[in-house]
Structures are given as structure tokens and as C-alpha cells.
Length: 168
Ligand SMILES: [Zn+2]
Ligand SMILES: [Zn+2]
Image (cartoon, rainbow, N blue to C red; front, top):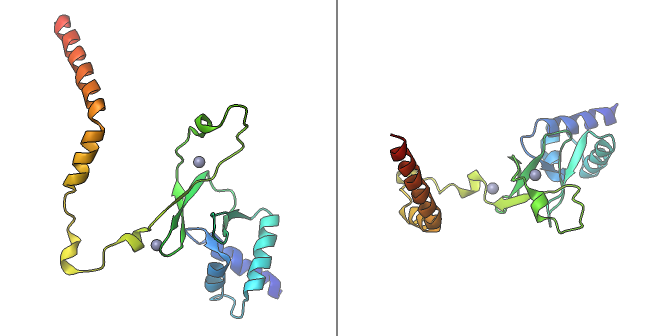
């Protein structure tokens, strides 16, 4: 009976989380429902929920595994290097096959983005810091990078206008 309640609380915690959780995070959240819950029980229950196919481990290189509910659509993860929380990233760059060496058989892929989450990258709260300045240097840089593209666009639009002139 006690086991069922613990198991239910742990599964509930993971089902209602908006991101993959480590066992320690599960413990903190599930303790609100089951006081006296211990980390060993959390680990044991998670293992058993993986065996039954209810949960999936999320492997993050160099980090304790996180866990999420199984059966989600294909997605990836973002590790915040500051708060060490792992978030779900929707979508996939795709076209992974193109990177597979000749003769290799691709069976799947995992992708971990990392950096700082929104909370950790937000500037410290100050009254005047709210308005974002236009990013002029970045705009310059991207223009320079796209110069060859621009040339091509100009050329093709010139061709197009010539065609339309002939048309009229
Ligand atoms: Zn963070
Ligand atoms: Zn993918």
C-alpha cells in the first residue's frame, strides 16, 4: 500500500513536470505528497517504471540521468550550465543521415543543446534595463556573412526583371 502511494507520487511528479527531472528533483517534488520519501526509494521506483515502459531515461553527457514520461514525440534537450536544469527542445534539425560515414547504419540520435536558460540569462532586475537596445553590430555581422547570398539574389532578380520586360 505504502509502495503504491510512493510509486503514484513519483509517477505523478514526472507526468506533471514540464521538463525532465533528476532523481533528486523528483525526490524534492514528490516529498510534498509523500513525506519521508527517500532517495533510494525514488531510484528503485524510477528503475521499475523504466522497466514497465512508463519512463525513459534522458542521458546528458557528464550529468546524472534525468527522467521523463515515455512516448513523447521525437525531441531534444537543453542543459542550462548555470542552474543545471534540463529542458525539452521541440523539433529536430533533421537531415542527420547526411553526417553518417559511408557503410555505417544510423539507428537514432540524441542532441543536447547547452547554454543558459531564460531565467539564468535574464539581466539582473533593474528599472532601466527593461528596454532592449537594437543590436547593430550583430546586424552588420550577419549582413557580411550573407553577402554572397545577396549577390545571388540580386542576380536572379535582375534575370527575373529582364524576363518580365520581354514578356510585356
Ligand atoms: Zn538556468
Ligand atoms: Zn532529432
